Structure formats: C-alpha cells, structure tokens
Image 1: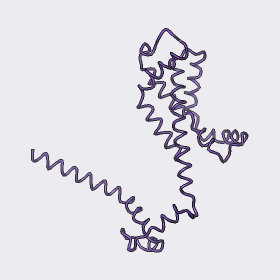
Image 2: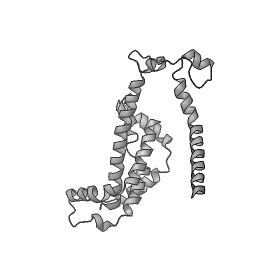
Image 3: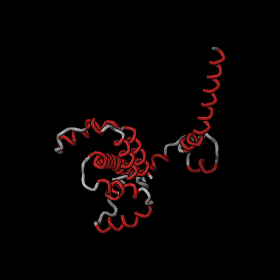
Image 4: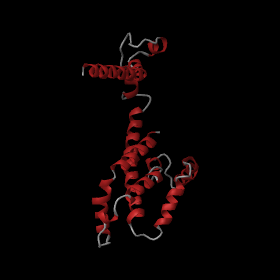
Length: 208
C-alpha cells in the first residue's frame, strides 16, 4: 500500500513538472506583458524589474490606437451566431435526409458526400464574388454565412441518426407538427457528441 502511494506521488510530481514545462512559455508571455517596452526588448528575465500596466492601457484604453475591444466584440458576435446557425442547419438537414420521406433525398445525400471531397479554398472566390454582388463585403454576413452549413457535420449527424431505431420517433401522423415534435423529443436530444464535435469544429473555424 505504501509502495503504491509512493508510485502515485512520483507520477503526480512528474506530471506536474511536465505541465509547468509546457506552461512556461505562456507564463513568460504573461509576465513580459507587465514589463516596459525597453525592458522587454533588452532583458530575458522572467520577472519584471518594474511592474507596469501601460501595455494594457495602450490596448484596452479609451484612446487605444488599436481597437482590440472592437475586434473581440466582432469575434464574439460572428462566432456565437455562426456556431448556433451551423448546428441548427446541420441537424435539420441530417434529420431530413435520414428520416423524412422526401423526394430526391438520396441524391441530396450523395451531394453532401461529394461536397466532402471539395477543398474549402476552391469555393472562396465564388463566395467572394457572390457576396460582392449582394453588397455584403465588410459586413458580418459573409463571415457568418460562409460557415452556416458544414457538410462534415451533416454527414456525422446523419450517420448518428441512422443508428437510432426508426420506430422510436415514428408515428402514424405525418403532419409537420408531429414530425418536428418527433425531431425535438427523440432525435435532437440523442446526439450531444456529434453536436459538440460540430460546435468545436465551427468554433475553431470562426476563430481562424
């Protein structure tokens, strides 16, 4: 028992040292931000000789030369709306292909699979031309709409929905109210892993 505790302590100590080693560049960066510009350029010491907040005032102050706060606000708006939109579109598209009796849904599924082979960079110029035609350049819309649907997300959620027994969400009434109720009660709550994966992918795309 004592040997096992000693082993666990050594493993924990080693893991802590490795974590500190990987965190050292981040710690150095944070501490350097409290140095004056001259000191930061001339010395490589870890701790500042003179602590100052001038660097933060020059960035986040009211008279800041660089509008960092505005950039952060833009990022928050685009990322939040874009991530919610892509989850909404992908889940509904996957549910429509997987469970609704729609004409041509197999064709649309083949289109989704084929779209997975198209590099994103190939679509950049057509999308730019389209947004320019609608006078949407320098607005939030292109940044949000570019990632408003993710073919990989549709494919992942479709595969997940196909694994759910169809009888769980099936009823004799095919009116849209009952169809959407089946989606909301049976299908949407049952796939948090795929939704979380889409959120992670889209969130990182918007931050790039």
